[in-house]
Image (cartoon, rainbow, N blue to C red; front, side, top):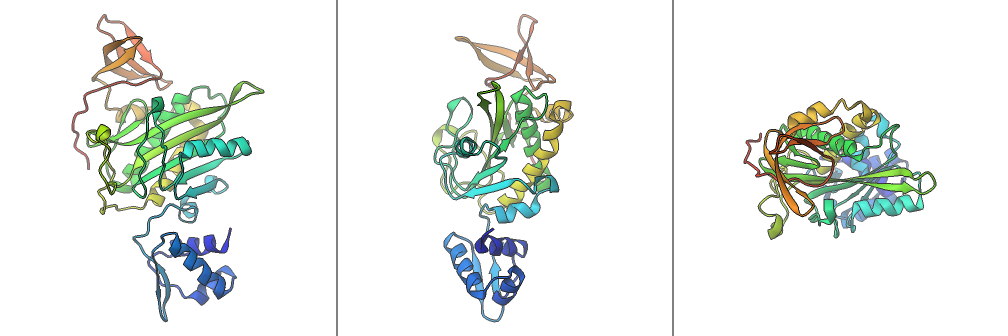
Length: 330
């Protein structure tokens, strides 16, 4: 860890407190000149650090830039060995994860970015990812034993995101099968799960789990095509937690579920949060659009629908449409 990273981690752990340059140097076992250079470097990166004579340096409590230094201390012990890589801007965290795995096949960790210039959603869609308003991250995972169903990963991630939001904010998000998180009738989070094939074994060698959360309102409006459905966890100024705290909580929640994914123990919570159950939905089948009633989530995360002729069908991928009703949120 560089001196700049050490200084940032110490300031993050003492956010809002004044710490003298000498105390920082002593704690980190570096020179005061090194501390000064690190502070200047952090200021250039956008960190709000105040320097007060006879008091020292203070990282503003309003600072909320994604960083390894702020996330790592909040992670559970099981995650302490995972690498956390944070970017200012990138084309796509999922694409960056793939590039890293191509260079380092054993890599396990998390890629985050303040902004994505080519954020990706399911079915090749663009995921709007403006700077400093969202939480965009990709988890690089190795498959757990006997896991041959990517839908289980997506559904577990949806539960983890909901648990994290509810724990930190008290708000009660819901799930639209299979991968969207809604709050007050608006989509606040999308999940994209992709696999990288091991060419020798012809099996999935690495899984990349992308999570995009609209944390606060962007500086400009959402694009016209998503304005009627996109929402945010907070308005521009009323966040009660930081994005770093939310990232750590999502990671902790997901990695609690992941090792035991095949037990499917989390699916009951998924079912309770899935607001499409009991509703009329439509889905494409060939050149047709089929209408059916969503009746259940099966043990593989598939959506069971009742067709007009009385038959049932299980959807395992693709997209459904439902008329979103405005729901009360806390």
